[in-house]
Amino acid sequence: MNIEHLKLFVRLATSQTISQAGHELGLSPAVASSYILKLEELLGVRLVHRTTRKVSLTSEGQTFLPYAEEVLSSVEAAKGAIGVGHTQPTGTLRVTAPASFGRLHLMPALSEFMRLYPELTVDFRFSDSIIDMVEGGFDVAIRIAELKDSSLIARKLASDRRIVTAAPAYIEQFGAPQNPQELIDHQCINLTGLEHWGFKTESGVVNIKTAGRFRCDNGDAMRDATIEGLGLSINSIWSVYQQLQRGELVEVLADYPLASDSNVWAVYPSSRLMALKVRAFIDFYIEYFNQSACWNRSYFNG
Image (cartoon, rainbow, N blue to C red; front, side):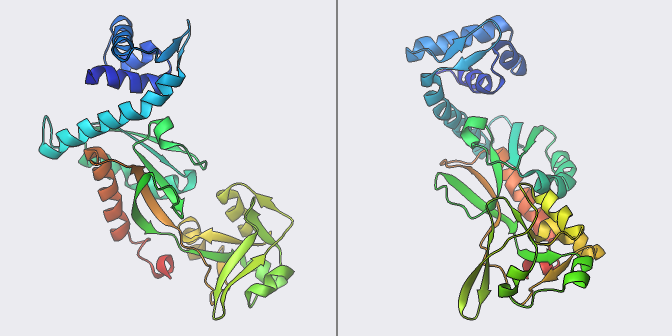
């Protein structure tokens, strides 16, 4: 099976046009089309539906795609492991990450990462939705949650400590809760569907159902609403540390830590071999977060 044919097929799954996929790999439309035909002839199935404007994968093509990606990933990792052709990461590294986290904590170090690896092209996609890595063709995903997908391999990048915050103006007007039970008397700002707040206490975890006049589906909007005094909210330290430093927000219920086991993870599809570009990215950001002044402040880790 020709590796170049597989590369074109995988790129075609994302671009959805043969000419664009071929252009990205330095191939003419005619050559690119012949590559796909040869791959289909070898496999004995049609992999793509063709129209005058674009192509889409057939059901067989969709089934074949993750296997093609796995073959290419293993080939690249094998070459990198033994130094065939290059000793530095090359090609395109595709990363998906939550929008706010990516902007605040990945972008500031990106220029240094790209300086270290000049032969690498980086494609970031920032989205607060959980994107299927295989379907999207991503090499690495940044996840901030408890991991449940056993098909992915994860490495911890940093801690994700979460706290309850409020604006000083809100506390001046309504006071601060002294224990979790008092939250029922306060305006609480929630992300949609996350109304139950769990706290660690001497008698175990206490869950409080909170409510308020405002809720939203975006962490930045929730933080901003808290700054404006609309209520209390749960925020990750990485999202509000600047506001804590400036005094725009303060922590409340500090004696009752939240029952949260989430961390910042870099995840990638399971494979016997890790691509050189993936290893470089993950190792770089682990080191970056370990040495970063803001991530080493005491309030990031409690």
